[in-house]
Length: 257
Ligand code: ADP
Image 1 (cartoon, protein in one colour):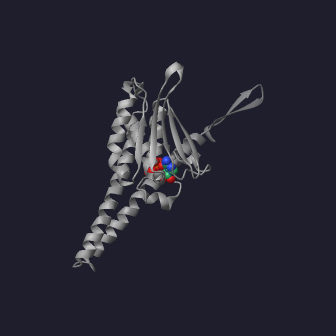
Image 2 (cartoon, rainbow, N blue to C red; image 1 turned 90 degrees about the vertical axis):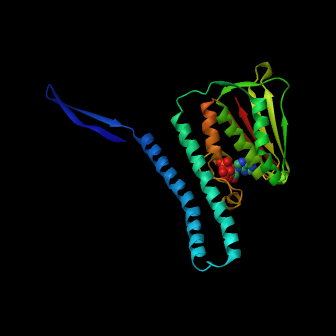
Image 3 (cartoon, rainbow, N blue to C red; image 1 turned 135 degrees about the vertical axis):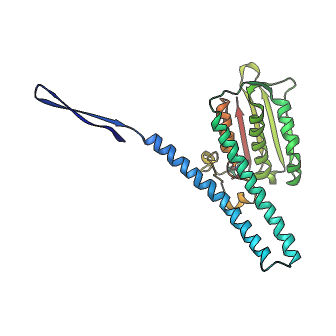
């Protein structure tokens, strides 16, 4: 709390009145701190692959100059690091674009059934890579919601990609669309049968850069920003995400419009 004006003293019939003005800036301070934490995290995440790239380049220019095997091996790793940085920059741009348009309501009329089919088709190479089958259950007719097509694609890409990446030992992922009949809300459920998320981590998984098991997650090629983006988009759509997870059994993410 800060004092925003000097004490004013009024003389009234010999009495002194003190008028003090204060403003609560804890919210503004908190936002400032979050912003600088975010910049620090983002810089740290970029610095690691950059340092590693520099190390490999120096080795290739120096001790491994004539080593063809080392060239092949290092180039693969350097390509991975560059891809990781691109992913991170893409996610950072997504977040800042969302912040810029947070005042514009998304209002296209979108049929979710073909949209989910499109997302699953786009993810099928990844699913094949990790040996996961994605099943889609949709009702017969169209299921409309008001929204932004690209943003909703991003939401379901993130959730289904996570289900494949983190739930891969379950071998299958089920995506179900519930049609909102009888006044019930429209829902999309993404279920995996993987290791699940320990209860104490569930409330934090939508925080920027939060990853449950940092070492294990790192091997799964992510930025820790995916669910933060999802949460942002769903808030804009006045939709909610419900996470139910049981360790050793799997995880169910439900998006309720
Ligand atoms: P990332 O880029 O790491 O995938 P996300 O924001 O998408 O970032 O997810 C945050 C963390 O939540 C992940 O690192 C992972 O630890 C955990 N997580 C997300 N989805 C699942 C899931 N389906 N099963 C288990 N853990 C998950």
